[in-house]
Image 1: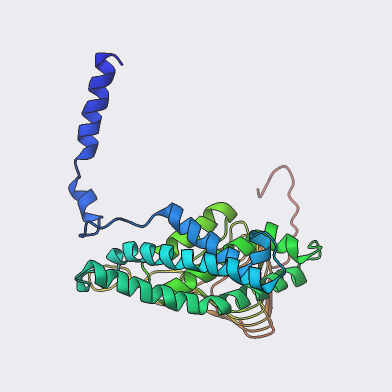
Image 2: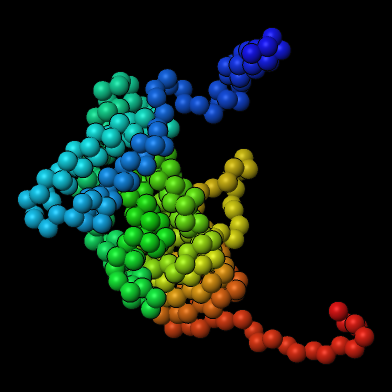
Length: 305
């Protein structure tokens, strides 16, 4: 490299190596390693291999071999998830209360064991989601298409993993997991949302489900649906309050494409919300909400346009 190139590179290396005040303020006060996005991806992959073993592993019909393979994945999951949770705990509210590295890893291992205990229920819920998607889509010829190909399976696998970690008060890791699915599928589900069994999203691109949303069982959403907040409340200092602000969707509700349901309202059970509507008030059970009919008007010479 010529002298000008060397000087430019060295100067900017020096500048970028200095931590700014803003940079320091955004970092945890500890010097522990931060979570690894690549390792979090591996955690999701391990869970998929445990929950859908025949789809994401070499198929093994013999239960003994199947058990062995799941055991190998489970051991790796235990080690990897414990380590990543430990790295993530420094972002949590209890970070200053944890005084030693051993205490951090003990806390992380306890959370990991609780997560592993939840895997059978996560598996049960995900298979209901696959069934719901198959039942709702005549284009699906078999369950393999749903598990291998449909973005809702990827999004819900990530969500159900992340939701359990969120319930265990694991910092950061749940958001990494759901945002990985968001970036690949266009389906944005906050890990704090509560979603019941037999949940289906058809197509999926552009779906947004906010943090405090509550969704019942046998609910179907189509592409572009938003379950969002209408406004934000603030405390006396002007800071936004994290309070329930997203919709409650009761059982057996269908919401068609590009509908926006906003605020802490309730969509009653067995209702249908039509496409491209804006809903900001609660809806009674068994309702049908749709756009108003088009009004025909005739203009001459461009008048009225």
